[in-house]
Amino acid sequence: MVFDPEEWQAAWIVAHRTKPPETPTPLGQMIRLIAGFGGFLGRKGAGHPGPKAMWEGIQKVSAFALGIAAAKQAFSPSG
Image (tube, rainbow, N blue to C red; front, side, top):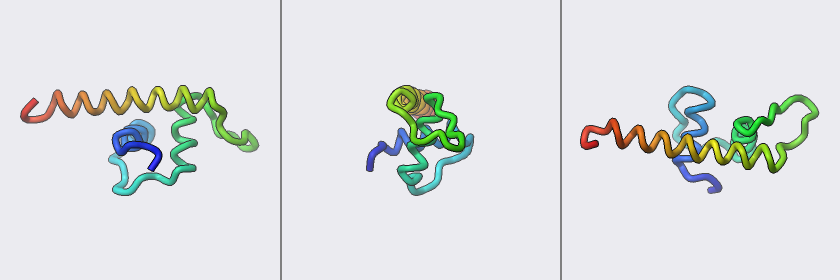
């Protein structure tokens, strides 16, 4: 497993605005999803995402995961 559950689920929630699936998204699909947060457009003939798009995307996914964790804690019945 490359991504923590909190990371891939946060990426899914932000990208699709739906509840994440029970099983993780395939790695290739996850890479393109994260690269999209970093500015990768994925146009025909664009090739693979570069390191800059991946770096920026991963930073955003980390922030999404922290935000979702904070919201869960703030709005939990015991919070």
